[in-house]
Image (cartoon, rainbow, N blue to C red; front, side, top):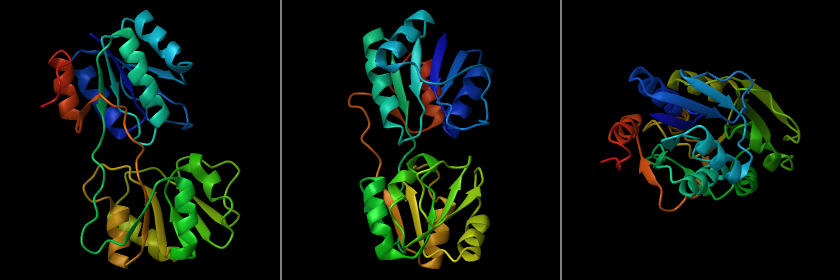
Length: 248
């Protein structure tokens, strides 16, 4: 059996490790946006497919039996391309989509529908922002001149960027003590992040709650309609080993 994993996430890497250990032929496709990604076991390809038609051709040419979309929840374009290409090629598709975050008592969340909306909200909430939305979306904040940003990313960002900015190059997973120290050391008074989901209590959200800081949360884009969804790696493995049946 040949499974294509659209990866780049922790879940995608863990899924590849599990399936590979079970003797499944696995090809992980990475977008190539990180200079030195953590490579999963099995076959790895880097870069785009050339749109929907290119992906459909690749699925047929490489005799793929199942596709699992384990991309980041905000990688909307590739998810829609995968849904269309899999349907065209008559290949079963599963979306491994980590559950989103939910506020708890003490949180001061301000939801935004886009990075641009988040950028407009920040000046009303603070003057020293911890920006954890990734380096690819910094252009949305380039026009915010009256806020200083601490930008955390794996690789150095490229312009356009906020005019007042310091870059913190780091790669998760992050600890609660570490996030507390970042907020303290840099005098952060507002956190900006995407609803990437995952752990029930993301350390940065807990640290912000403890410090009484407002948090701007960018909502996820909608997922493609009609695609089966698994919330955990275990569910995705069961779907593959069950021959493409829906996760329970």
